[in-house]
Image (cartoon, rainbow, N blue to C red; front, top):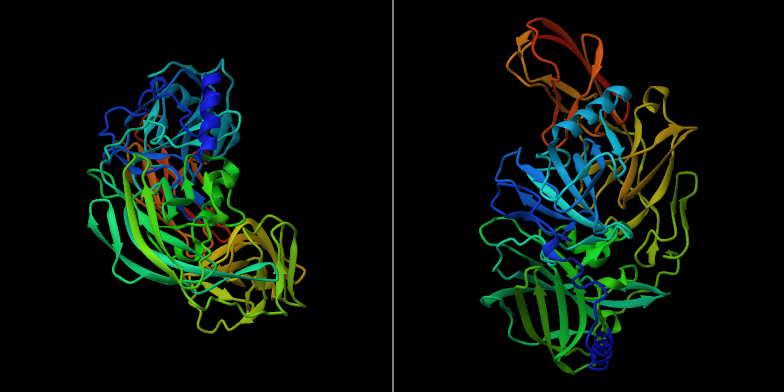
Length: 580
């Protein structure tokens, strides 16, 4: 212990960074969670998804379902979940070593657990269940079968989503960097583009320049340069954004970056590392990334500076928040490194020169300043109100609510506009917490039950935000900043059986339907066979509803009735027969 303390003191004296979240797991304690696969992955820990960091690793199951899943260590089954979205069928193991293993997108649980889930669904007449157990009910030993891989929930293809969490803090671990999962990877990350942004501060609010972008080319493996040879002109207060992605051996998938660092004249001034995060930090990918660029990129746009609301533990090295303050005429050498979680690195080196004039933002004394630490109420009197709670913003910003022209807006089939279009926040503004929006518009009775708030995103798509109409107004909560209006969704979901009416299904294990909705999304469904409720699984990425038969064929005709309701209350009912 004394030697460790002395080493830490020496590292601090030499200016070295001591990570609070370095190697924390012992790979020898765990076995691989799935049997009979190649060991390739399709997604890595911490890669940036819309609105969240990816919390685990996605292990390929070679394009098929039904691979055996095993307990990675001794423990017990503490929770099983069946839901349409998210991880779909998910199983949680509480391990003896203080960790929880999470298995997502299962096809089915092992037989005894599956039977318990089926009983709970019938007892509650519910398609979704969330069951918890104590240590005495489902103990498991390392390597013991617990279920089978699948494609349930918000899954784009057969795979296992696997996580390890700390039981006390619920911190998720980077399993590749920790050595628990070891995919074949000798491929260095790709640096695809460089961006430079200047910042000015007005009334305590950071205001950014439009930004400048520079093309990058690879010279040798892991080494990149700018396509221009002259020094980059920079202002007195700015930072870089690196656009990068990663690849692994033998797969076509792209992956996220584990580490990004920036050094000036040999001194590291900024370092980002994705060693792990808690549930509360998952949304902070919108602060780690340069969100306005990330919205339109298929790569990761990592801001090489810390935004005010970004968790400090993501940045083990940070000088002046990563912002570069360059005097006019001064010249410096900049080196940017990106590294994947297998230790492969790439770098980009170039020269910068301070320019005589820097970006200056125009002062707008009429705009409202929304602060990070307190709530802000934005209004257009008599038309719209928006409450942005404290902690919703990653930094203070200027706001000016306005009414917009919605004449050229593209609307999905069956969606009718019922109010003007309002802009509360710029649609490139990330929100950590939801804002509450109220739009005031008298509506005819025929439209009131179908009325909801919709948001037009930065990409121009119109998405459902929710709310219920009452007393000439509708209120909803949304984390998507964009242009808002009230619409009516007038179309019910479509239902199409994937079998002919009266078909013989004696050799089929399932009863299947294709379902889709035009806008609001499917909110509820109910399937009855011979007048009795039966469970039915929804696979949203495939657009299907599936009932798995749990009784043997009897060679007789059955009546089936399925009702499907969207989030606006529109319902479709289908009736038919089959033999089994």
